[in-house]
Image (cartoon, rainbow, N blue to C red):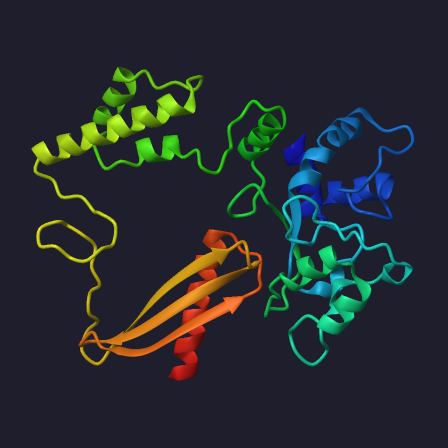
Length: 310
């Protein structure tokens, strides 16, 4: 039902979407539609999944003229993506009314005057799109923004406290991403009896033992493996910076998310084929980005910097 409701929300020009809109939500959208009078069995079933979709749906910025300020999930805040400011003047207004007319920036004076502190900080942290593409709905629980039954199931299980989604719980990724043949990892899995219902302390001890076991196995097989970036020691297999070709400049890029300052930082370093420093740049933006998005925006910043510098 969640998948069908998502299709109605994202494919508004389809025949079935237009039929349901004329019947049940003529003056709103399917995400905020009500049950209506004398609803069909199918519509009742779809409405059972509405709260789930509402929890995960967000607007991706584009042409802000089509997004209503009120009653639409366009903020990037984790808990409540809706505007909380209760002002009559916001009725019927679209997001573009809070953007400067002469440049692509938020009108800080207007935003500060109209919205409360929570909404103001959330709005000013939203990056504006340079393209004029139409706004799109995306699913916040998937990296690429597309709804999936798997992520919806995870969400429901998390709400019922049946699913562990702690940020620091990377046990499975750690174990299964170790560079070793699958049969070796399976052997460690079996020998250590690694199962879901064990306590975290034992799980981490098991993973540590597994990594030590696999490291010994790799050594006996005379195989090189990559270690974290550090000063080079001959023979340790560490990742090192490689000089670009003659007459070329290489840009090294990194990003960091500063939750305490409500923004992200980008670091850019340009070096020539001799390894000499040409230029460096640091940028801080008050934007709400995930670590993956911050890395992508760092690349974008580097490309713009290269273009400006010729």
